[in-house]
Length: 286
Ligand code: ATP
Ligand code: MG
Image (cartoon, rainbow, N blue to C red):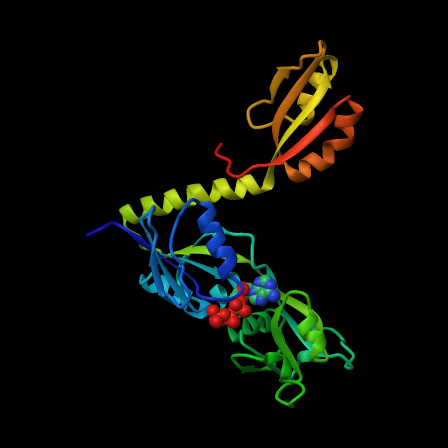
């Protein structure tokens, strides 16, 4: 049998584009025609299953898929036994409690004895237990925001990113109860040959992620300030120093986390650095 692993990704929705871009940036090619439910890569031993995100944790737990990309909200809500391999940094959102705009919010005790509509009964139930509030949870699968205006509930618990959906429905966010981003999950009993393929994929994903958060920095500096500049931008092992055609000057090349660069920019300039270029890195293997 051909040795190939299966990954479940969302068919279409807020996880799909970033999931597929990440896989492409890992150099994995595949055909993703509209309406296709399955596809095999032409250059990496991986097959894709395109599913609703609700089904991904279950498919991975059952071993129908070896890997999956899903939001932590869906993962925790479904409560399946899988291994989280990596946070992926996209599809960031939060689950929050919201109430009608006109109501005065007095703290979480507001919800005592109230009805709350949500698609996340487990996460909400765990939260209410933690803060010691008893409220009735009404599980509905979509359009949660309209529940208060139709008299189903006094509050809701739903995904918020900008808050504009809440506002349009006359609601205000009052408590954030869960933070979520996309994660890579795996079946917990992968056989060794599958683990080896997963490790290859993880290696590539790490290289892509590292590349994104780091920049290649080039600058010119007078030789007498090189020592100071090297201490500010130490790089991976150490910076590359190349002489400029003009005597007494050098070009310094280094790799830096982007935020580190901004922290050091004034000191670099004060030390005499000029002609500073910051260039994106596609992949980074240390
Ligand atoms: P499906 O049809 O696959 O069940 P869905 O409608 O349940 O899709 P989407 O709205 O596509 O789900 O959201 C998928 C995931 O993306 C959510 O579970 C959440 O983790 C994340 N997400 C949701 N809303 C946002 C948002 N506004 N911004 C960023 N990420 C979000
Ligand atoms: Mg869904």
